[in-house]
Length: 257
Length: 280
Image (tube, rainbow over all chains, first blue to last red; front, side):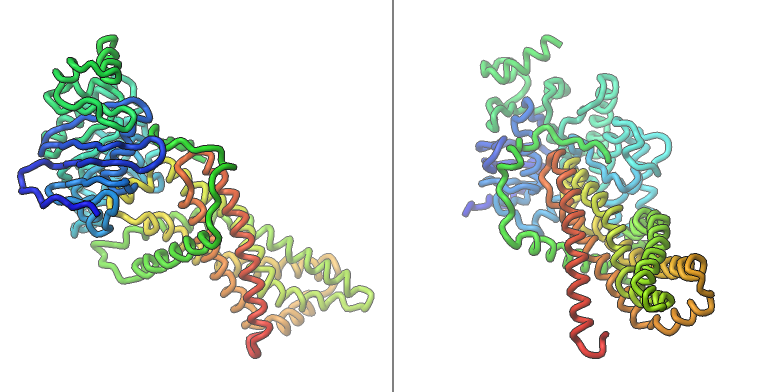
C-alpha cells in the first residue's frame, strides 16, 4: 500500500505527479514524476506511442496505474486505487482537452460547454447558457453555436473543447496534442488563444505534444517522454544541451523546421 | 456512421481472434449493472425539476424520440399492414376446407394484439436501431467522448443511455399500438376486400375476440422489449475497446443479442401467462 504524501500547503504546485508507473500493456509508463506550478506550463514532449495520452488518462483516473501518486491543488490520490469520490472532487478542478476534442456528438457546441456548469454548479439554465455563450465567444467560435460539433470545422471543435475545459475555472488544464489535425495557421491561432486564456484565467497547463515548438514558447518546464520514461526534464537550455537521442531528434526537428 | 478518430496513443490491439473471451456471465453482470444505473437516472429524470433548472437530459429524450420512435412509424406501419394481410390469408387458407375463413378475423385480433404486434415491432426496432445505438456508443468510445464525460465527473449512462432508453420505453408501446391498429386494417383489407366478406361481419368477429387484456399483455411485452433492446444495445456499444474495428463488431453483436433477448423474454412471458391461472 502506497503512503500518500501529506496535503501540500496552498500556493504549491497546481499538479504533481509522483512515480507514475504502469499499467502493463503498450505503451507503459516507468516512474514518471513532474510538477506544474500554479499558473505555469509544463510541456511533455514525445513521439507517437511514447505514452503521452496514457499519462493524461492516468492523471485523470480514467485508467489505473500500477503505482504512483497524483496531487491536484494539494490533494493527493493514489493513481493505482483511485477512490471515486476523490476523483469526482479532483476532476472538478481539472479541465481537459483531448486529442480528438471529444465533444459529445449528440449535443450542440453550446450544450457541450454549458454541461459542466449545469451539472457541477447551482447556476440556473439561463445563466449557464449565457456564461457558455460568452466563453465560446472568448475562444473565438463564431456563428451558430446551436449546431452539433460534426458540422463545425476542426478548429472550432478544438476551440469549443477548450471552452468546455475552462468553463468551471479549473486550476489546471490538461491538453493532449493542442494542434492535432490543424494547419499551421489554425494551430498558431489556437496557441495564441490558449496562451491568452491561460493568463486570463490564471490556470496551470500540462501540454502533451509531439511538436517541439511548444517547448520554445515563453519560459516553461519541459519533460521529454520516450518509451514511457522521462529521459530529460528541465528548461529549454537543458533540452538543447541534452545528448539523449530522443531529445536530439526532437530539437533537431525544430532546427530543420 | 461517423468516422472515429482513435487517439494516437491508444494501445495497440492484437488480432481479434487472439483476444481473451469474456468470462461466462460477464455480459449478464455488466447489463445488470447498466440496467440498475439507468433505472436510477430514469428515476432522477422523472423527479420534479424547477423551471430554472430543467432535467439536463430532457432535451435528449425528445431528440431520441424523434429518431427512434417517429422515424420508425413508416416502417412499422407498412409492415403491420402487410402482417395483417398475411395472417388473414394464412389462417383463411387453413380454414377454407371447413368453410370458416371468416374465423381468421378472430384469430387475427388476439394474435396480433398479444403476440405478433409487440414482437414484430420489437424485431423491426432491433433491425433499425439496435445496431445504430451500439455503433454510435462504440464510435463515441473510440473518439474519446465517453472519457471526456468521465473526466468531467459526469456519468455517460445519464447522458447517453438514459435518453435512448426513455425514448424506447415511450416509443415501443406507441408503435405497438399503431402496429396493432394497422394490422387490424390489413386484416380487414384481406377479409372484406379480397376474400369478399362484409365489413360488419369482420367487425363483429373482431369485437368478440379482441379482449382488452390481450392489448394490455401486448403493451406490457413492448415495455419489456424496449428495456431489453435499450440495455443490450447500449451495453454492447459501451463495452468495446478503443479501436475503430470494434464499432462494426459491437453493432453486429447488439443485433444478435437483442433478437435473442426479445425472443427469450417473449417465450418466458408466454409461459408465465399460460401457466399462471387467470392471466391467460
